[in-house]
Image (cartoon, rainbow, N blue to C red; front, side, top):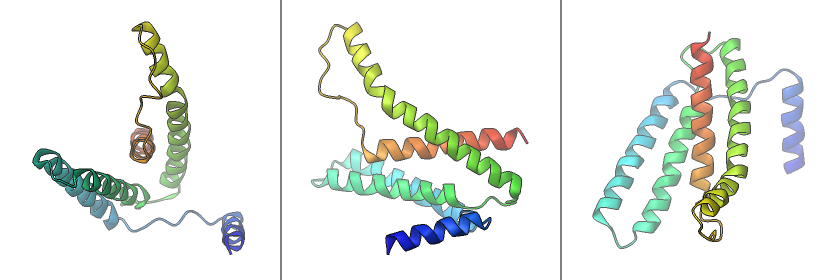
Length: 150
């Protein structure tokens, strides 16, 4: 079943198909979802609820969903140039995100060595939220930079 889906996706791409994007209105829906979840997350941190850790994890995933909707939504005037910029930004975000994830632990170890501390067992929080939000923000940053160069 999974192999059929991947084969169909490869055939679609070979025929010149592009990644299906969602309508432009979802860009604002994504922003509203992310901002609302961030506000509620801040309130949860201030109020200090008994199940605060559960709500924190839930809201961080909701923020990621909002950001993802923002990223895969079409631009108001989506054309082939914008599509090329989008793919280019995805490539840059992937490379930068991967480099950051690979080298952050090494940088932390080096800083610990400079401070004459023994490195703790990978002190960084390499959580799903950190990794995904980094990739999404890198994409958004590069996409905006590339759009301004048009």
